[in-house]
Amino acid sequence: MKKVGMLFASILLLAGCNAPWASDSSGETGTENKDDQVTIEVMMFEGGFGSEWVKSSADAYMEQNENVSVEVIASPDIHQQLQTRFLSNDVPDLMVPGPSFDIMGVINDGKILGLDDYLEEDSYSGEEKWLDTFEQGQFNLKRDGKTLGIPTVFSSGYVWWYNEALFEENGWETPETWQDLYVLKDQAAEKEIPLFAVPGMHPGYYFNGIFIPLVERIGGKQAVLDAFNLKEGAWTSEAFAEAARESQKMVEEGLFLEGTFGLSHTEAQTLFFQNQALFATAGTWLEGEMSDIIPEDFKLRAMNQPIWEGSDAEFLAPVSTGWGGAWYVTEDSENKEETVQFLKFLSSSEEVKKMVESRGLASVVKNTEDAISSDALKSALTVMQEAEGSYAPTAINDSYPEMTNNMINIYQSLMLNEITPEEFTQRAEEFAAQVRDDSSIQKMEFSW
Image (cartoon, rainbow, N blue to C red):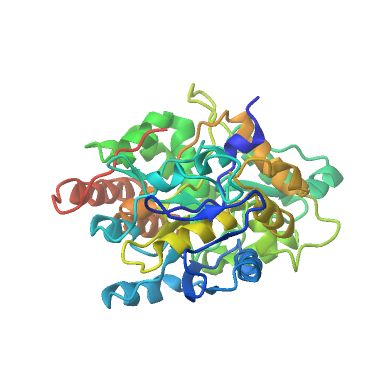
């Protein structure tokens, strides 16, 4: 079995080339002129992973480096601020743009710094090469051979979460096949509990948590790869058509909580933690995001999506490895060297362990897995271990944001019975064709 660390995608952060920093064995470092005061501006998306772990590390770093000030700006709407800043050529030094920012646009404009040379330098402690401090299973944010960003926190993607205590109390089994869902649906109906509470205001949660895994279960990962790589006819293939029909059937058969398609993600998750539904679709941020409302007797656990009977497709689980959740150093930063040094500190095992312990998150930084104490997180990582590292990324969100938003919106229409499965797949194919035929859009080649 692969080491847990090989599956963690974390808090790594990097930048450009040949930094003139010196470090002693204690990790104490400084600039060539310690009298120069430097301000490093960090702008980051604040979602379920929070931002306190970054602010805490920034405070610790400033205590060790009196000539450096680190300012952290965190917001769920950071993409709007970043858009304004890039338009005005007033960029931060370091950023996590989040899922709504057009990161590919700024990468294509040459606004993001390549990181490979810095990875060959010493780590913050100076004991090894910086690159060697990371498990590299998800070092995949590259363009034209250049490493541009690193995933911040490992997420096992849109797995299905459930209350193990509730299942044990009622003698229910987690479904192994998609058809088992309907058996469980009838059993739970005796307690008047539907299967899913999903955030209809954010349909990406079930586009990625139900639909794409279902396509993969039916047609194998090649069906998803063909679609992500914009192969002609992929979105109207039988795997997508069957998954669309099944999605609509799930609604018609009452597998979803009434009113769930009008809820926010926190509203849907709150109802889930109140045992108003058996499953929530979310990533490993769920426990940390909802920690204030999780009952003490709630045994949160993760499971992989069920298999599709009659298919010989591989048993895989999609994970979120998109570009929007990574750290980037901007090309126009006036403090590249100082920013890199802060990132080395922020991604050191000592600092990452604090993040793992405080937020219940997993990291790709080596020697941090022992800090994981959450049984819920461990269960999600077990799902990924059992998938043996084979998973579908959700990176089309960042590579083709307009197309992805259109796909998600029409999937919502499908679930609301506003369009037929045939209309869904046809429209999806049309959106893919628009991107495929647009020479101004740089194409990505996906593989996993």
